[in-house]
Amino acid sequence: MNYIDEAEMEMMKSIENLEERLVTVRAGRANPSMLNGIMVDYYGVPSAINAVANITVPEARQLFIKPFDKSIIKEIERAINEANIGITPTNNGEMVILTIPQLTEETRRNYVKQVSEMGEQTKIALRNARQDANNAIKKDETLTEDDQKRMTDDVQELINKYNKIVDERIKEKETELMSV
Image 1 (cartoon, one colour):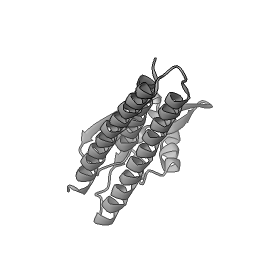
Image 2: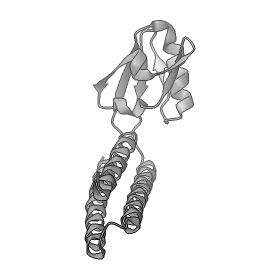
Image 3: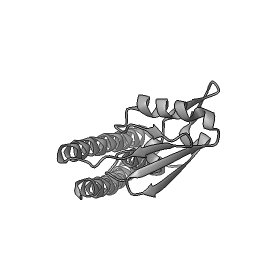
């Protein structure tokens, strides 16, 4: 694999990471991915919520978490409380119910700031990938000066492309957050 392909792979990983992180920012609507990363103590083994329960969205602002084993309802509630996602779980003996509160203007603005920071962190990761590729190209003594120049220009085109993708994703998420 050449330097440009390696740089593009790193940049694609950064974009995927951004996508995963953006999904966790709630926009006032219920989304099962809000619970990603929350672990439940299931008989002494930390397990993802979606591995021990069915998660459904009956309404736009509600999540139902129906465990396969009803004895862990309290554990699921505890895990959600400890995760500090800003939603208080309730249970009806059968399942855990999360009601997503309506977002206030201030909360929306805070989420927009958080999303902007995620975008900036992704751009930093992209710049690091560019720097690594450029350093590798400069250290390769088998390349001519013209080849080095062409390859560093190709890497720059890549980072421009991926920066544009980051800007688009961030703008989409900000629009989604600010729409009521």
